Image: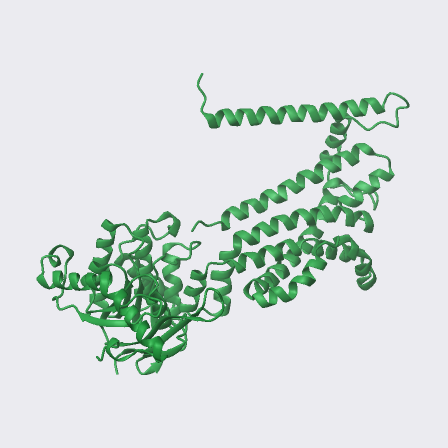
Length: 267
Length: 284
C-alpha cells in the first residue's frame, strides 16, 4: 500500500521512539538485575518495582502525615508554588529591565559587563547570602528561583526590543502614542516572540534550580522529597520522583510553547 | 507663504567611509497649497523619501526647515500622516486594530463607540469589510495598502504623505487602488505630498510634479504643472495630448537632464566652494 512521505516519516518516528523506550527499560532492568545478584538490598530497583511504587504514590498523592511523610502531589504543589512566585517576579523584573536595555544601546553597553559577570553564577551560590539576609529558608529558595530565571528572559527581551523593526517605532512616533500605549501595543507585542523564547529557557533553569534549592533548605518540595527518600534508602521513590520531575518540566515547557504560538506573528 | 512650505531644506548624511558628510539634497524650496496634490519624482538616491520623512517629522533637515500653516515642524504630529511603501502595519494586529490604533490617537477624547463606528466606516471605504479580523500576513499587497490608506485617511491629517505607496503592489491592482486613492482624496481634499518613481502615477494623481536631479547633491530642478482636468481616469487620460507631452518631458528629464544638471551643479559648486543656487531653484 502506498504511503505518503510525511506519513512514512511519522511511522518511522513512532517506531524509533518505541525502540528507544524498550532499550532504556531493558538497560535499566539489566542494571537492576546485575546489582541484585548478591545481597538483595544493594541493587537499583527495576522498572516493575518503580511502577508499583508509582502506582501507590499516585493513588494517594495529597496525604500529610507530618513533616517527613507527605504525599508526592503535595510536595509537587510546594515546589510549583515557589516556582510560580520566583519565576513570575523574575519575569516582570527581567522584561522591564530588558525593555530598558533593549531601547538604549548606551545603557546596554554600560550594563553588559555587569550582566556578563552575574550571568554565569549558579543561582544556588546566592543561597547563603539570602539565608543570612532574610533568615527564612522558604523565601531564600524563592529568591534562588528568581535569580535562576532572571537572565535568559532579560537577555532575550533586550534582544527582541533592540531588533524591533524601525517601521513600527516610526508609526508609533507618527501616532504620538503615549508611553503606556507604546509599551503595551507596540513594544511588547513586537518583542513578544523573543520574550517568550527567553521565558521558556528561564522556566527550564528555574525548574532545575528548585530541586537543588529544596534539597538544601529541606522541609517541603520535590527536592526535599528526593533527599528524604534517599535518607530512607527508598530508591523506588527516588526514581519515581526523578521521572516525575522530568515530566513536569516537559509540561511547563509545553504550556509556554502554547503561549509562544499565541503571540507569534508573521510579517 | 504656502500652506506647506519646504524652506531651503538641505540634508547631509555621514559619509559611508565615516570621514565627512555626504550631501543628499541641497537647497530644496517649494510650497504646497492647501488641498493641493504635489508629487516629487526622481531617481533612487535623490533623497525624496528623506524629504518626505523630514516633512513627517521623523527626520530633521541639516539646514533649512519645513513650515506648516506658518509654524515650523519640529517632530511628528497628528496633523501629518504617512502611507508607507512597505505598508508598516503592525503584524500582530488585525485590520480593525491597526486602524483603531490610529483613530484613538487622532481623537483621544472620543468614546469607544464612536471610535468603532469611525474605524468601521474607513475599513468599509477601502473595501475591506469582511477582512476586518485578518492580520496583515493574511492579506495581499494591495489589501495591505488599503489598510494603510484607511489608517491614514481615518486620522484626517492636514497633510497626507505618500511614500511610493504603490511600488510594492502588482501593476493590475495598482490601478484600482490609485483610483480609490483619488476617490478618497476627492472627498477629503487633504493636502498631499507624494514621492514616486512612476511617471504615469504622478501625472494621473498630481496637480504639480517636482523633478529632482540625481543624488548625491540633488537639487529641485523644476516643477511642472499638470493641466489635465479632473476627474481623470486611467483609461481616458492616456489619449490626452497634454498627457503625452508631460510624460515625454518628464521621461526625458529622468533619462538625460537629471544627471546632466547634477553634474553641472556639482561642477559649479565645487571650484568656487559656494553653493550653487539661482537657476536650479524654481522661483515660484
